[in-house]
Image 1: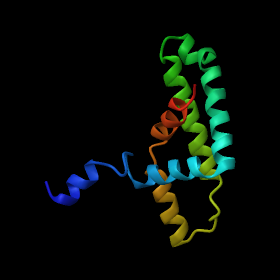
Image 2: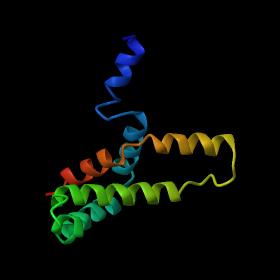
Image 3: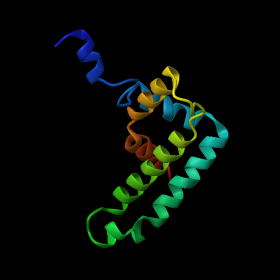
Image 4: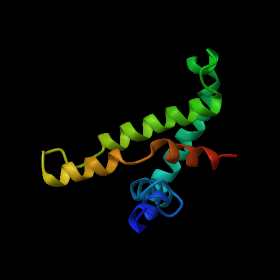
Length: 114
């Protein structure tokens, strides 16, 4: 294993990769984002027990909250992309967002709740 492969397997700043870390950092450090996504995490946590996949025994309430919040994060952040024209920059931004581990970000938001 090369040193580059070893470094890649370790993640970035305790996160799966740089892209995941960057999203989590911005969500935590921008006050309006912080407040909004903490509220969404609370909502997902409260609604988890009524999720049909929890009722059917497929997921635990924690899994439902994590998956539902991760889906919402991914959809809303990708939809908010300011680059809509097909350009090299738009392709690179799209590629970076596709590397984000949305479940890791969601789990982090949920674990901070009381």
